[in-house]
Image 1 (cartoon, rainbow, N blue to C red):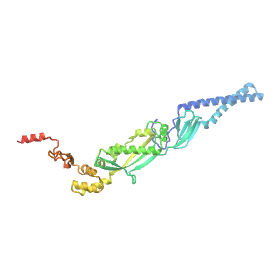
Image 2 (spheres, one colour):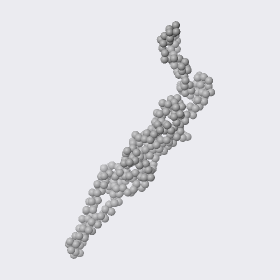
Image 3 (cartoon, rainbow, N blue to C red):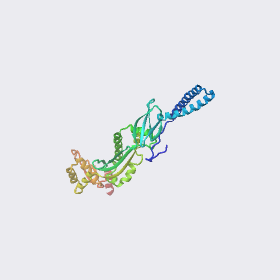
Length: 330
């Protein structure tokens, strides 16, 4: 079935072939029995009225056929279900205990199928993440970043996941909306977090929300989640920005003149020592790196570390290489 994305058109009911077979058998049976009974009655009435036998039989057959056709009209309310717009009605087969969904309009059903519940096809989950009072920050390689995005989750009515709308709506209705909302938000947040945690804050800002949108939240990015819940989802990244706490730390460092002073100022602002050192090392001084030295004669010195400008030492050369160079100069 082709995908239909027009919300003004209700999905078509996929009536099983077995329903038409059963209705055909039932209809034929009712018509035959009604025809026979009415015809017999008509013939008996004709004979009682002293009519000719052949004439009475002819009239009886004609009246019997008309009676049989009229009996079909009597069956209509028992084999049809009228469903209003934007509603999916769950029908339960009382014999097989199976369910199916019928949509807007007049639908054929079996006499032993009964309506169980109605599903609102206009129901959807929508949330703005990152608005005031609902802020989320995500860790990057050197800090944290804020993101604001809107997500919408609704039932799949147009075979988007290559599942018939009736099956999708049944899957959708089998979950509570709160459950779908919690699981969906977790998936979206995890996808964004996994993406930015391998990047620096500046790289995320430079990349921009449009490129991130196309990379992290392209159409059908969460198809497995959608198939599981009979849904379709859309995530729109509205804004990205640095974490205000990170900006405050940058302002503090900008006013300092040394590494030690920067770390001390950050600790006074409430940051832990380890976090302050990490922040200074990886964010504020990109051209420095940490090295570890072992000095002969200072065996009792258990640890010594510091920040040394990159390029000050050629730490890739061994002592042998240095001695060799000294020999060459001689």
